[in-house]
Length: 171
Image (cartoon, rainbow, N blue to C red; front, side, top):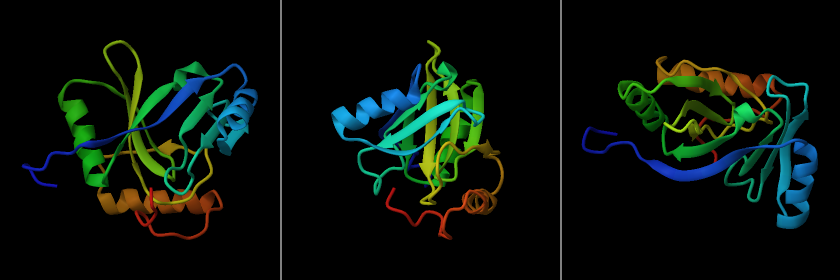
């Protein structure tokens, strides 16, 4: 990426919805739209009860995330590279927008902020690492790229994922 080649989002790649009962709502999306559950928890994670669903798991880790805690509702925008993610992070901060949180999800590196009306926006880069969700460790996007990449691999390994190369997946 150069100064003439600014970072761009690829588009919206998943949404996080609030749900009174993520498991029951996941069942609805499976039965009606044919989505597959690819992760989630009954409430024993830091995120509370969750469900993660996909329609094409070979392309994205999930299309829909359901959260019992409405604070995690969000719209997620994908970027092409870790350099783009870091450039957007700097842009958001330079524009005076507060970054609410940044996470290593194993499957992605991401940061979150609110738009002027309070909607949570996620910007993420998929690592290509397989890791069951929910999974999140704090992330410092000012660290060197090599360290960030190694953190994604290490997190996935701790979560029991098979060894992999970061950035190698089809995501």
